[in-house]
Length: 334
Ligand SMILES: Cc1cc2nc3c(=O)[nH]c(=O)nc-3n(C[C@H](O)[C@H](O)[C@H](O)COP(=O)(O)OP(=O)(O)OC[C@H]3O[C@@H](n4cnc5c(N)ncnc54)[C@H](O)[C@@H]3O)c2cc1C
Image 1 (cartoon, protein in one colour):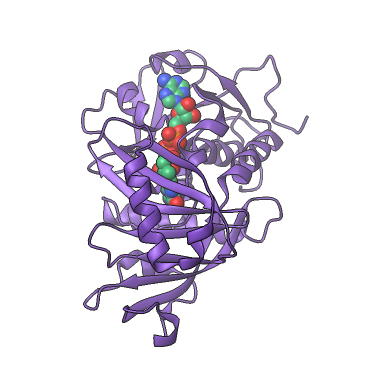
Image 2: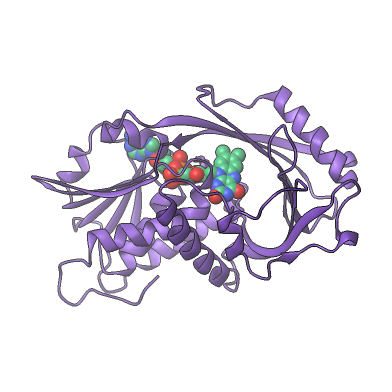
């Protein structure tokens, strides 16, 4: 067992509630700075909303703007680094974003590596404006187990346990991270959180290796996100919808819109529809709350961009919590 590991009998000094991308990344970063970390999760980490994500770093700005920019940039840096790590599930993909003729490039897009205006012959028929770039795309089916192995290598561990009240993990550890996704709202007694419904259609990959996003579609963003063995088609998000089940009618629409832009999808077999309710909030929340029995770092509200903000949010959690207060346990960064 590596030094500083959590043995089966020792108590953790940090409990992360939630094994989605925000919780697991926070756990890895905390464990890498010497914390004995346990992750408590109601669901199997392979069955969370995060595990269903299409996995693209998205230039989506959420409030607060400064955090959006800082966390997305941090995540971009970490994910680009992970694209060079064999087995992480992250790879760099060529992208093309189509815009309306008067469309401007949003601030976060400017962070994308190798961003340039698309040449006219790179645009599908009927489009006049677009940008080319490279972006990290994360295969969550590979990435979630990779994060778990990384956590385990730092001595952390995962327990299947549903938390009803944050007093439960606080009774075990002085530091608790509330990264329970949509359920974080109830645990934090936060009435500002609203569900955001998100859905992608997953098909076989008929040979598509370029990511394509059409922001000029008045019906909403249309995205085609390729993984080696499948393609995620979507971009559907609906604020306020409380039914997280897949919407077959919407799926048929998305499939049709994507086939209009990418004819190779016409014969691609549909594999499944991924849908979930995500935590929407007027502002993303990564904030420390001091209680009599310890501190709670709240980390939720990343709506449809949890992968995009994960490393930035996790490093902010670690900064707020500080290093483990035990001598001789600090290790190299994650
Ligand atoms: C179809 C789809 C595609 C997406 N594509 C992208 C994308 O391409 N790029 C991107 O950046 N984002 C994408 N997202 C959004 C992203 O998945 C979310 O932002 C992200 O999942 C939020 O992560 P999270 O860790 O906050 O919560 P979650 O993934 O929801 O995890 C919550 C965790 O908390 C646990 N939990 C809940 N309640 C309790 C409790 N009471 N006690 C203990 N544990 C509890 C759960 O079991 C789970 O482990 C997509 C989402 C969907 C649904």
